[in-house]
Amino acid sequence: MKKLVFLSASVMSALIASQAFAVSNNTIAFQGEVTAETCSVTVNGNTAKPTILLPTVNVSALNGSGKVAGQTTFDIGVTSCGGNNITSTAISTVFTGNNVSDKGNLSNLAATDAAGNVEIQILDTKGKGINFNDGSFSGAGDLTLAAGKKEASATYTAQYYATGAATAGAVEATMQYAISYK
Image (cartoon, rainbow, N blue to C red):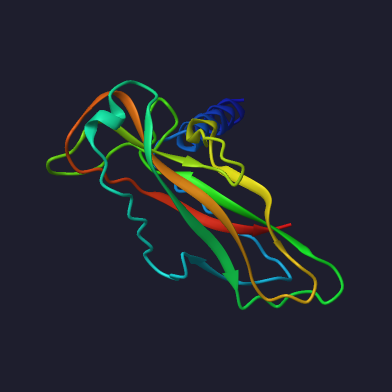
């Protein structure tokens, strides 16, 4: 009987410990995809460490909450695709925001002389603001690789977004990007 009680207590302890471990904040999630199609991904033609330069704007253009300025387009492209000679392939762009604000935009990460009350807002291919508080953005089928083609692209927009009257300074933000084949 003592062995059964000890065994039950040991099992319960192990279960409780494993549940506590499963919900800890030090978990790394890995995601990937295995697919018949593969392509190289570019941002404005760059395959590594792309930078989108927004224009310099006057603080008067961002003088109140919700004001936007400095719209700058950028292309997410796929090249060197295997392609299907018979049917088109839908490819989705996936964006994940880093340091997302309560408005769902990319927070200003400038380390020195940062502009105040300014974020970066990303617009989808239809010109609608992407809310990163909803999780990762997946532009379902925003890229279509036509039958027999080896490349395609989709155009997005980045813009300054004021959360109040802007103050002058630098604006920097980051996001992760990937593509998913469907």
